[in-house]
Amino acid sequence: MNHLTIQEQSIIRQIQSETDKKNLDNISRTAAYLSYFKENPDIIWSFLASMVSRNGGWNMCDLSGSIFPHLIAAKTRKQLFLTYERANWLIFHDVFPQLLVYQYSTKINRPMFHLLSFFNVSSFIQKEWQRYWIGNDKKRLTTALIINEQNVIQTPVIDHPIYKKKVFRSLIFSFQDWLHFSCVLFPTCGGEVYGASVNGFKSLSKRINLGKRLAEILFHPRLFPYFFEFAEKTPHTGSRYDYEQYFKIKTVRNTPMLRTSFPVITHHQHESEDWSMRRTVSPAWLYFPVRHQHPIHLTDWYFAKSNQLQLLLSIQKVLQLKKWE
View 1 (tube, helix red, strand yellow):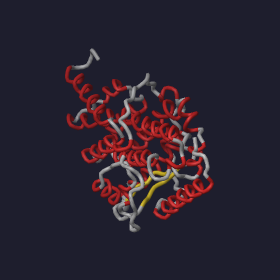
View 2: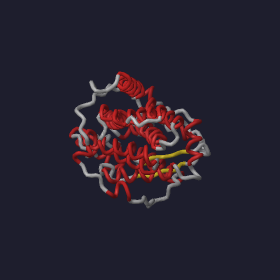
View 3: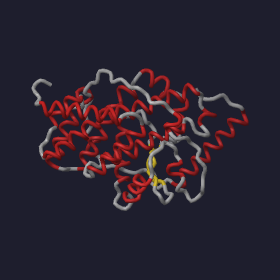
View 4: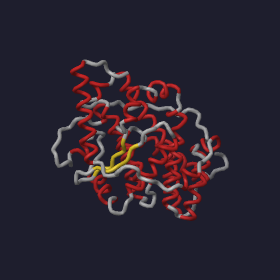
């Protein structure tokens, strides 16, 4: 850092401090992404990140809800929570400095992307920010950020020996994956739910494709105002009641709020590698258009899946089956 100006060194420290402060838990991350989008509406990825992060919180709180504790052993639920939390933390740790460097660049009307290397972000995304500064291609930047963040979690989470053994090869994960329970939902204040799912979550390309499909749904000109209204009007608590409260069929709170259920986890960043030095960026990731193979309006699907889970719980109780581990 010796060759940086005092001002640049100060900016790096400020960015690091703000990132650490807002990377406390899923609630703070989700709020930070949304707040950033409202201040920088051209960076549409930030709104996508906020809505996907909401889903991460809902998935976490499912683990302490009215169903999963009866189906899944406590040790396995803890491991699932730590997996969700680690991925959520890693992505924020990587991307929020990028967002703040861009924001600072816009304020002084000069690109400051040379600072990104001090935050160990990939050379791929550094080039993409520079490209965006010149060409202002929002869709390209959104796709690039989706590619980058999914690659960021591939080695430390998806391919990590512990997560691989205890989570991604577990019966419950395979079951969720197969039945598309792992669905990303975008609710509205009108009680409707849209979204998309992926089976084959371990596949990097499938997750990138999912991200691209989600971006297309979220920013659909007709639907975006409804999703943004929901985000503005509804504080994120981690409980699915955040959106279930808007359903026409009244429901009770079946999942708790995140901060009443889970502790703040202290993370450590291990030696970070530049994934783009080891992995080739597939042209399909950047250029292939997305195709929606399933309906994106998921309200009826959501109720059907909820009923399936209730049925599963009833069967488990009647047959007194052992909890999944």
